[in-house]
Image (cartoon, rainbow, N blue to C red):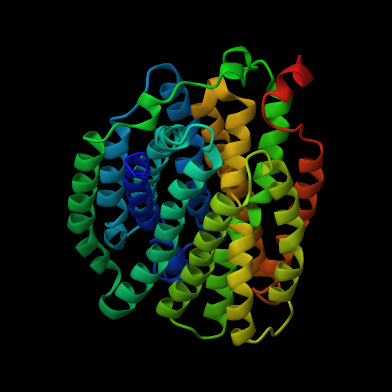
Amino acid sequence: MNRYLPIFCLAMTHALVDAVAMFIEPLWPELRHSLHLTQWQFFALVSLTQVAPNFSQLLFGFVQDRWGSRYLLWLGPMVAAATLCALGFAGTPAMLGLLLTVGYIAVGSFHPEAAVTSSLALPGQRTRGLSLFMVGGTAGLALGPMLSGNLTEAWGLTSLIWLALPAIALLGAVHWILRRTATGAEAAAPPAHALHAPQLGSRWKLALLLLTVCSLRVVPNAGLTKALAFTLEARGFETSVIGNMQSLFLASGSLGMLLVGTRFRHGTERSVMIWSALGAIPLMAGLSIPGCPTWLMVLLLIPTGVVLVGTTPAMVSYAHQIFPQDAGMASALTMGLSWGTSGLIVAGLVSWTIDHASSPAMLFATLIPSLILAAAGALALPPAGPPIISHLK
């Protein structure tokens, strides 16, 4: 049980960080109207929420690999909670952009150090450790839209600030427990083959292929919540319903992560990456049907969340196995840069579709090609584990 306590603490922190990061998701339609955002302002702000937390992970991953960054396990989450709970006080697009920049960089600072610590907490079971850690994050992703959507509908955008102090207090309590618990990163020795494994910088072609595959794979993950927001708003639903539907999709991902962590054996990560992309295609096609009934959307969101969100730990675990000497950078690539790249794609798709397409539901259809390309690209990736060393030399 002691081996799991650090992961539990990190998962709790992950839940809080990702919850505040998702506060804005059900609010995009309202903010677009209240701040009178142009198409380009909207594109820039949506892009910012993807670039700031995800691209910044490259820097924090480099710091983690070279010097360690354990202080970011508490500093990043606290700054994120303070700034992203204050979004309702942004009276101009510039102020909203400033709060998003600071808050989402703080979100990005937490992930590389936390992911590496979680993956090393269970030696020989990286995928399980990462899955449990990411279950916490997915629970937070699911909780965030529901909290912000219902709270702002009842008491307005500024009511989000009420969540700042409780969140910071809870973060402090969890980190106090974590500091008194032996961490996997301190206790676990690296695998023997890791000492002679290729480094990420020297295998840039493989790193670029992996980045491309992961970026395409998470385009639907990043785009589906926004597609839901604008599709449901066009049907007359309030922010509370939008937030609840987004939360249903993301909460279903927690079930998928538990499934991956407990049912899929070590070494199957590449296969999971391939088949999850293919399995999501018919589900996304169902959501994109013109006039798809809302009740059918609800039913489709559950397996879609399991397949799309639930299998993302496989990407991180795969990256850690092929680049064990640069686990922090590998985490930044699969949890940061890939999401940032996909977020830019989604921002372009969303800003164009909501202004030019006949129906916002067309957003679901625009996300399908990335799944086809992700599955094809994953087929070109080499198997993970010790054999990859001789394969790449």
